Length: 115
Length: 110
Image (cartoon, rainbow over all chains, first blue to last red; front, side):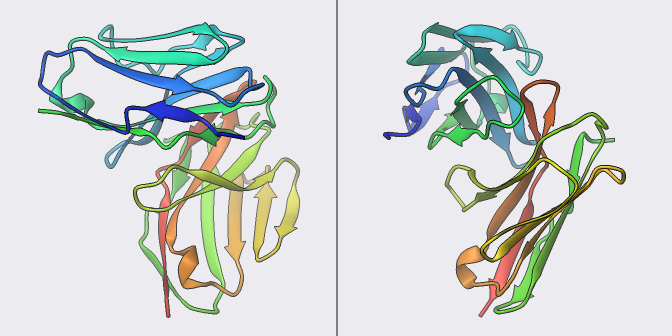
C-alpha cells in the first residue's frame, strides 16, 4: 500500500502565479478530500469527491480555487492567481467508501508559500 | 460556536502519567468520532475511532463518547515522550464530511 501521494512537497511562488497541487489516492478508495491547515484556522475541509464527483465544495475560499478529479487515481487543486494568504499546508486524504465511519488516510501534504 | 472545540494547550504531562484530552462538538446528529495524532511537520494519522456511547480501549489509548453531552475524550495511559504531538478531534457532519478541531498540543516530560 503506497499511501496517498501528493506532489510537490514544497512549493514557493510569487503572488499572482498559478499553483497546481496534485494527489493520487490509495488504490480502491473512492472518496477524496482536500484540506488546508494553518496555525490560525487549523485543518479546514476545502472540497471532497465521491466516485470522482465533487460533493461539497462549500469550503473552497473563493473563485481563485478550483479542484478536479478526472479519474479515480488523480486529483488536482489549482489556485489562480495565488495570494500570500494562501500560504498553508494542503493535505489530500482518501477513504474506502462513502459512509460515515470511514477514516481518512492523509498524504504527506504540500507546503505552499506565496511571497 | 465552533463546530468542534478543543483546548489548544499546551498540555504538559509527566512521563508515566495519564494524559486527558477533551473535545466538544455542536452537531447533535454526528455519528462518528475520531482522534488523530499529528507530529510536527507530519500529516495527521488516525489513532482511535468511536461510534457509540461509552468507552473504547486500544492499548494505552481509551476513547470516551457521551452523545447527550456532545463530548468526546481521549485518555493516554502510561504516557511516553513519543506521545508528544498535537491531537486532533474529528467529527462527521452529514454522511461523510469530517470536521476537525484546532487540536491540543501535548508534551510528555521525561
